[in-house]
Image (cartoon, rainbow, N blue to C red; front, side):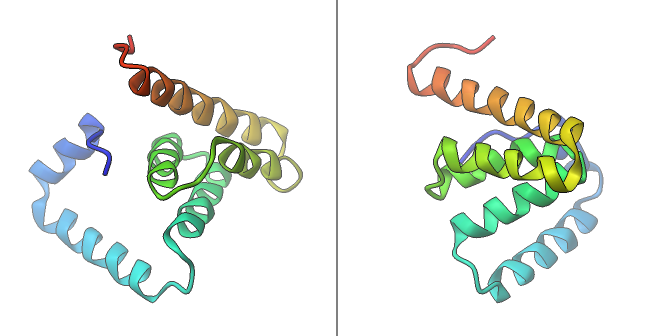
Length: 115
């Protein structure tokens, strides 16, 4: 499981623990009733994040999709599929965020310290 937690997420959890817990409970309930496996669920959520232009959610779901067995090609294919539905600029922003996370993953697996 990834240990990367953005500062804004950590600060939110510290400042509003009751809201964070309620949000977490809702997310767990939705995941539990999903008919999709974890990998597919993360790819679907990634697609929604790209369409919403939610950078943090894109980055988070890339990491989670990788943890659940998605390949870099599958993750990038989600961004490419967004071209015809969400528009070229939206898809390219998503692809940039994806590639930045994938680059960080490569750096971490090689044992280097990403700047």
